[in-house]
Length: 394
Image (cartoon, rainbow, N blue to C red; front, side, top):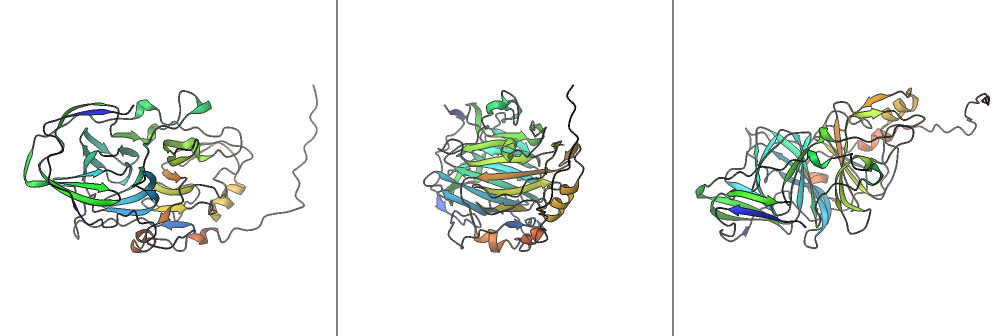
């Protein structure tokens, strides 16, 4: 059972009526542009300069892609946030779903009704449906958001892994109660995301007036360095599902609305194996981002603060340099992704890209396909494995 109690100084019902406001680049319109099944990659998204324009977390939200519908409570949306200014006398509430926030540049101080959380790059946080929060930033700030409708994020089932592994429950942190009994004579703004649109209302007091709370429906954060990596120790290449941090399950067993997957520093030891991700098509949409470092399958072109999308049944895999290097490499134990943290939002939904993602942002890398153009045919029908002397039975 999910429940929580908030002990407030004043109830949140005391506010003026909500009225529509501009949504900017925040959208749930998946039919604004024609579908595009191509492999897509974005260069790092621009962060506006504070000397030119002040942009807070809400006005800095940009929808990249998504599918489904918040009204029917079934779907997913992926946003970027790029901002440079803290929210002042303003809070945000998402009535549609949960936000999983992945900071990439700059820490963010999130004040919630439950207390405060400082979230830095290489950490994530989840703000669940309906929770009001405000974001303070300390310079030019950028990150990724995975939004899900109709389900909440939870730890994946571990199955044969057993009791310990992947993201352990003990490493998740929730805020301690914090409150302010503050009157705002000039008006406090509450921004509400409802059915894919933004609305705002006014009240004369801070919503962060919760003196105490208890329950199990809370915001929380997690440090990705605490992830207990499981990997192949003999041969072959495991499915990336072994790197799942959190999942939002669908009504179909074994199928997720969305998984949050990371590719952290780890050991590579597999023998007789092409160790990078193999070339493939699959029945999931894969949106990838890079927090820091160099992703091993595409060390050039895929940059921190950028992204890629490989849609359902669209082929993808390592670039030419990665293929050639790893096809001839001597297989010995080695550290993989040292100093790197890449991640993936993987979904069973066939996601549509927004007009902002395909055009307005001006960061789509239209030469992305070229990273595979130089792949060569190495097939030799006469090749045979080298013969070995018969073993002597003792």
